[in-house]
Image 1: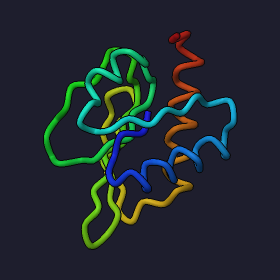
Image 2: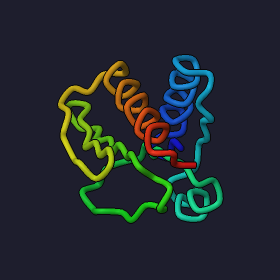
Image 3: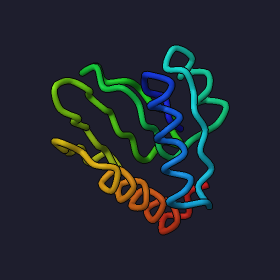
Length: 111
């Protein structure tokens, strides 16, 4: 699920993710309605704005990427509860994280 701002960025990320891996089901959501959308959709991965506040995620989320757009593009990344930071994060890095999350889901039989 892609739920960051602005809308055009959200749409661009969703398209890039889908083009990289057509088997991924990609959904975009307005950050303001994230809680309800995430509960209904049950995503394994969530890409959102990172405002420094820890946001609870649905139980289905095994990976989240919090994007910080400032002078540089940075991200906080969590896969299976392990949090790391990326500076000047690239699309390739984001796609690799989502592939890692998909592998984790597959290896652990998560539905």
